[in-house]
Amino acid sequence: MKEFLTRFQFPIAIIISLSGAAFLLKMCYLSLAFNTAFGIVFLTVVYVFVRLRYDLTVPPLLLGLVLAGVEIDALGNYWRLYGSQFGPLQYDEFAHLTIQVLVTPIIVWLTGRAMLRLGYQVTPGFTTLFAGTTTFSLSAFYEIIELWDELYFGGHRIWNTQDTARDLQFDLCGIVAGAALAYLLLRRDLLSERPPRESLSSIG
Image 1 (cartoon, rainbow, N blue to C red):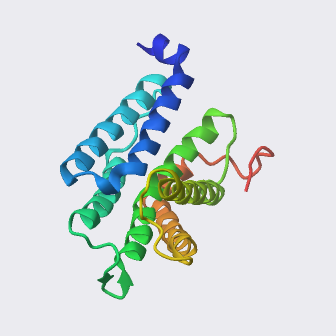
Image 2: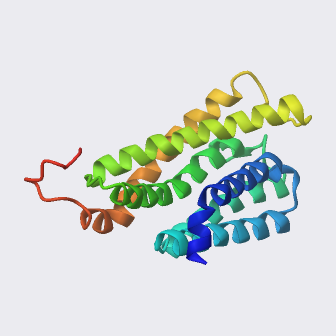
């Protein structure tokens, strides 16, 4: 199995990525049950692929946080909360803020592992910063997916001229909070990967 995954890792990674992008494109129109089931299956596939191909075991807590993020969006669509007030925020703002808090820790963890596999020994702060910029890039890509839905698929997910900028603003706030959460959850794990102070290969 590992030999197969090694040989076809790039096609498999592309299929997984395209499946995730297609899900994000249509998830707001799908049922709560389907979104929940797809989220569980998708995360399980990612978990199995990473474990078998790279011998990495993603902490179940981090996967659970990502699934909770999927549920926040799915429940918002199910209860038709988007476009309505949710406490001091609009639900759309709350969702963008909270989802990034929940998703950022797994990006930090994966970034730390990727750096080690590539031979770079970096400080926890640098790992968290790099992961945060990666997460913000993914957030920007999601806004492009919303634009594609508007332009090519007849969707209605961009409410006004400020919608995208407002979404990214709350994404950024969520990523900062999520990076702090990741540092608290993973600090010991990240510190165990830190090189000695005298190492000239240390970055950050």
